[in-house]
Structure formats: C-alpha cells, structure tokens
Length: 264
Image 1 (spheres, helix red, strand yellow):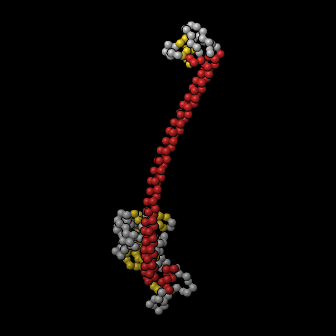
Image 2: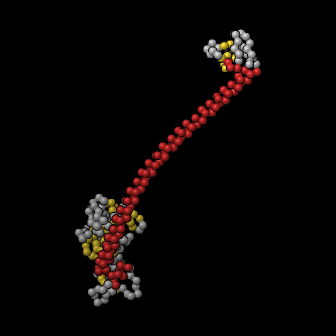
C-alpha cells in the first residue's frame, strides 16, 4: 500500500502521507515504478524519510529543490528533520542562498508558482520573491495537496475493502450453488440409471408376456383340431387333463376313464 510520495526523481527523501511506525515498509512510486524500504524510526504524517543513504554534507533534495545539507550521515529509512539537516536552502541549478528571482510578464511559471506570484507581496515589486519564500509557499501548497490526496486514498481504500467483502460473499454463494448443482447432477445420473433398468425390465416382461400368449394360442389351436383322450384330474375335479394342460369341462362331456370323449 502506498504510504509515501516523491515529487522529483532527483529527490533523496520521501514524504509520508500517513503516520509510519518503525519497522513499517515505506512504499512510494517514482518514475512509474513502485519502490519501498524499511522505516528505521517512527515518522509523523507529512514528515520526511531518507529514500537512500545521504552522506554528511550532501544536499538534501525534496520536490526537486535543495532544502539543506545533511548535518550527519543519514541512513535509508531514517527520519530527516532539523536534527540532522542544516538549514541551508538552495536550488539544483544555483548555489546562492536567498537569491531573488524575477518572473517577467512573458514567462509562464508552473501553476503553483503562478498562484504565489499573483498574490500581493510586501516587497516593492509584487512579482518579486526570494527563493526561500517560494520554497516555503511551494511546500505549503504541496502539503495541502498531499492531505487532499491522502483523504481520497483513504476513501478509495474504504470502497475497495467494501468491494472485496462483497466479492467474498459472492464467491461463497457461488461455491454453495456449485455444490448444489453437483449434488443434483449426481441425483440425475442415478435416476437415469434407474430409468434404464426399469426400461430393460419392462422389455423383458413384454417379451415374457408375448411368449406366454404364443404358447396359449398354440394350446387352444391344438385342442380345437383334434380330440384327445383325457382323464379327470384328481386335483381339479370338474376339469379335464389335455396334453398336460387344463381346459374347462364345459367344452367336453366327461366319460369314464379310458373312453374317447366327443365335443358337444
């Protein structure tokens, strides 16, 4: 998560856009690349940390401007403030202190400097300011922009957290639906197999019934074409035994055992 910012690639310090504790990872974007280092000290919001090692006497650069020189060796991640920076402001292009610059009417300064110049100034020339004053005003407006950006970042982080929470709920719901779908699919497979078994059993029973009807037809046809010597069955009185089958005695006249029977 971005918790610091750098304005110019020449800067050797970054500005914290939220409070940073010792041991935290300081992350910032420079030249389109995300970089990070470990904080060696607690740092309040809008304070500076060394983005790299700064030797004693080396200029401290912030927002592309020299804001002083290191009063001692400063390690990457250390808090950069008045305790280790000598108050000596200078630009990258000039070494003079408090050099006055004048902006002509034809020049187009950057937006922040333009706003500064457009306001009244106590000097004789309202468009004439010292480098120190410009740097101070520049830093003030930059810090205001940083605060505004920090507020926007917090709002976006909150919205992102809410969106992630909604996404987790949707993923959980999707997992439940997939499990239910898999359960129904397995049930459908079982029902399909059962239906196939029932269809096979139904076909077998139809074949058996057809075969049974065929045998009955053959028996009836045989009994109708030829008389048969029959005997009264001792288990079924009133019925006749014909070639291993039983026919109702209503179609035959019973006769004593061994005699030929004639159909009425």
